[in-house]
Image (cartoon, rainbow, N blue to C red; front, side, top):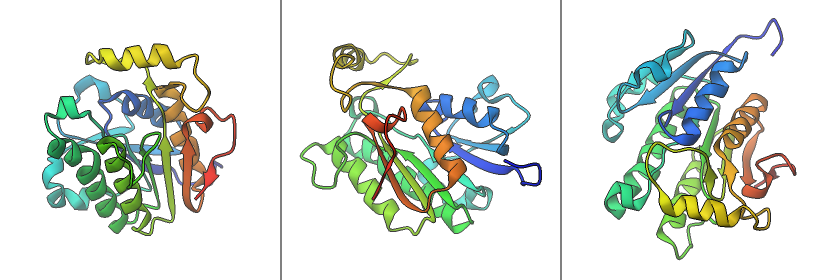
Length: 223
């Protein structure tokens, strides 16, 4: 960013999660952003204590009444859960499709020009796996919103220290650490850094970054 540039506003949803927490740290450290609006369902207290950060506590199931506050240049969505944690497929779909979709719609209507989201390896609307199909449906919906710049990252297993206990993911992370690059775990901090770097450049159209490319070993593919 040059001295004459105007600092941008970033909107982050999912700051309490693994990737979201790393994304928050990257946004706060970046000179590109003068303000970071953290949209969250509960008060995060000292986790978001920084002069740049403003916290907006919302009900994601009823986001429209707070639409006037969802004003930003770049939107980073790291919302996500597991079917086990959600308790049902319906609830999982709320968190991984409905909430991100509504956030994207409302923030785009208020002038945001870049949207970045964490999808998953193998995401697709025709996937036989419910998790991957929901992720694919969100990707497809976002593509039709007319974002000037849309970034979709598709990591394999996300590596990092979580607050909640996910033993199966820890086992998968260990086993996949020696797998081919396509399947290897990707550190949460690496995903966050890639999201922020892409936003800086605002690549036009849709940019899909597959898991093997997230560390920067290859150029993101255009879709």
